[in-house]
Image 1: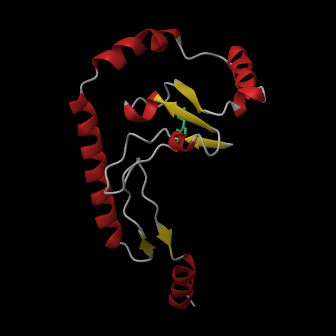
Image 2: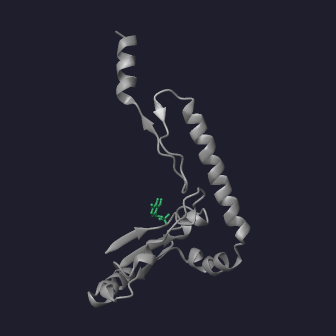
Image 3: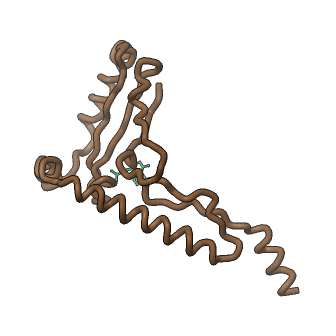
Length: 152
Ligand SMILES: Cc1ncc(COP(=O)(O)O)c(C=O)c1O
């Protein structure tokens, strides 16, 4: 079984096309999780969903779907006002909102990677093509040895 956390699936802005794992459901059952917090930029709203892609019924036969449902019955739900807002959010958000978000994220990634180049001992090995993160490497060993040389 593949568990695919695809909360950033709609926040892709690079050249690489996003492929949801669910398309491989006939090869291996896929449990995909999504969340409203990233695509709509509402961190902390704690509202998401689980989707199974399981055309061969493996998760169903093993009782995994029932097990997930029973767990959802005992876990706490998102706040009532958030649940109340969901229909409007889903129905009324215009496409332009999403494209603006990805434009902002692309711009932020560009700025962040460019600025990182100016900082010695920090490198950005790959410019992000999605989500809200930039992975940076610190050359701590070099940094430490040059600091030691300076301070001996
Ligand atoms: C990779 C990933 N999955 C899931 C979540 C959870 O999202 P939520 O804000 O809906 O709790 C986060 C939140 O930061 C995340 O980064």
